[in-house]
Each structure stands twice: as C-alpha cells, then as structure tokens.
Length: 331
Image 1 (cartoon, rainbow, N blue to C red):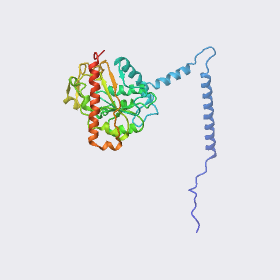
Image 2: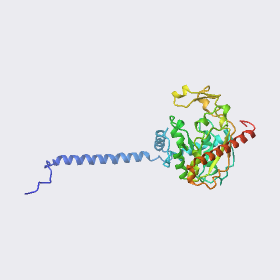
Image 3: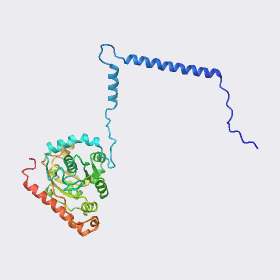
Image 4: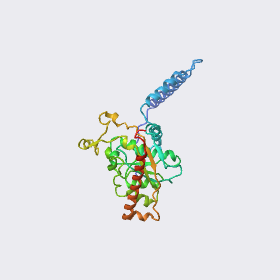
C-alpha cells in the first residue's frame, strides 16, 4: 500500500510577466533610495567657510527637545529600590541642609568607628523623616568606603502617594524586622527609630521625652546577627516642625494618622511644610556591650527587655545632656 503524498496541493504557475514587473519595481525602489541618500549627504556637507552645519544643529536640538521631562534612571537599583543616580542628584540638597540650613554638629562618629554594618538606634523627631535622611547622609559622608546606610520608614508614610518611590530611591525602607535583618546581612547599616509613630507624633511640650521602645526589636536583631547596636541622640530635629496640637478626624479622610498643626502649617499652605532652620546635634554613643551573649540570647525575653531599657536610658541621658548644654534652638 503506497504512502500518501507529502506534497500539498499544487500551486498555479506564476505568470512570467508579473514576475518581471515585480523585479522592475524593486529596481526602481532601490534606485530611488540611492538618490535620496546621495542628496541628503550632499545637503549635510557644510559649505566651505560657513563654519556651521545647520542640519546637525537642528537635529541636535530636536533630540534634546524630545527628551525634555525624561529622567535618566540607573541600571543599579537594588532590591529595596535605592538608585545611585537619584542619590547623586539629591546629595547636593542634603549637603546644603546638613551644612547650611541645620548646621549639624556630629559627635562620636569617627571614620573607623563604629564597625560597619551597625544598627543605629535614635530618637524619633517629627512626622517627616528628615532625621533618618540626615543620619544616613552623615554616616555615609563619614564612611564613603562602606555601603550607604538605610533608614527605616513607618508604614503610614510609605503608603502615601508618590512617597514610596522617592523614599526608596534615597535609601528609605519600610520598617520591619525582616527588612532590617536582610539589610544587615548584606553588609548595609540600618538607622532605626524604635519609638515608632508614638515618637514622631509627640507634641511640642513633650519633645525629647522618649516613648517606650516597642517590643525590643532592635535588641533582638543585634543579638541574633551579632552586629553593633549604636545609640544615637538627635537634638534640634524636633524643632523643625513643632507640633502644637493634632487633629484626628480630618486626617483619617486622607489616610494620615493625624493632621499636625504647627506655627506654619496649615496657615502658610505648602510653604508650611518647609522645615525651620533649627540647629542640630547628633551624638553617637558607644555600641551597647552584649558581653558573652550569643545569637540564642535573642529568644531570652527577660534579657531582651533589660537590654532594651538600657538602650533607651542611654539615649535619654545623651538627649538630656545635649539639650541642657545647647545655647539656643537656632544658634
């Protein structure tokens, strides 16, 4: 029994005249392309003595106009969203704020101390994360050879429209134990604020009084990973946006924990968000001594509570001393 034929249905033979016409059209198109290319090259050649190639200038201007409003992005964006291109653009503003606007004095931060990566724990200062931004910036300037530190940001701020990509680009990371541990394991230092929202929501009369440090998360992380736990006192940041009182009902409509009322906000509108030029101090204490405790000590509730109280007391002492010895809020 013969096998079925593998060839498909027969096609009608092409008319030789149609094939000849198609070849003529193709030759005509090729000739047209050559003539257009030759004429364009002639027009691009600058006239002798003119000194300017107007077509090149026009083409350059067209390319520039077509990219207005476009932002160059770095290919080196890490898993938390920090972008070196964004950091480079913001660093000029950060330098101006640190050196001229707030005139930040730093104590206890040496080029070789503390060892990095470290977990820096500071008092919270206001709703906007200027304290975290400035701490990370100052540490990065003191240790340019080390990966740039990251600062932890509260959930309510990360979820605000347009806030998350901006904060992530400059090194802000959502505050949780998992993120802090991942950063420290990768060799990047972390700036943490254990007071959480309770600390940043303090009104002006309660400034520089530390609130409870949550459940001891900072101490647990430092014990579990064996990284230095460095207490930091920030003075002056709580005067940048002094909260006179808080409004809760209107704030819930826009997804805020509360609506702060300051001497400038909301009276001056968007200008009220500009921070006041208070004089800042940053005091870095000695890393907390864990003695013989190893990673298994992170599960010891009594030890964690005791070390957390010691950490909070150490920061409060540094705050009280710095506030007592400063001459003025703005000088």
